[in-house]
Image 1 (cartoon, one colour):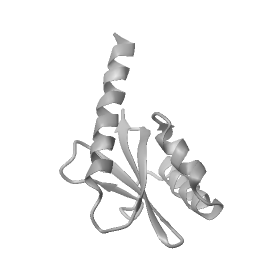
Image 2: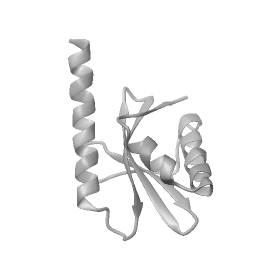
Image 3: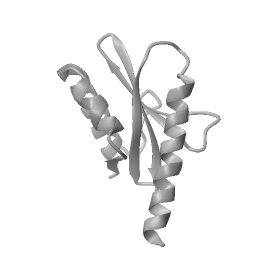
Image 4: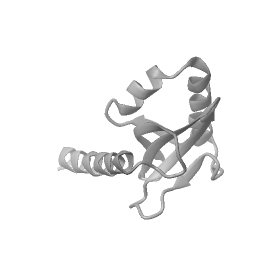
Length: 114
């Protein structure tokens, strides 16, 4: 079983702005991520050209939600920022923010352990 951790307030802020049906879909996918050993690519996809960054994929009514995430020690999924995807291409600024948050997370973690 994986643990899920939201880094910063990006995920919580995004989640609270969603309608109930979208929240239910997000909850379903996160629950799947917690309990399934092999998560289908439909729900979790590695973002090519990134240093182990993933997008959690949620299809809600009339919108595609992407939650950028990464793994820490294999069983902890760290949620970073989120977007509602409007085109086929992932917005560069959202991807850059996710990369920045991942670096910040591990830097802070290393400082805490030192």
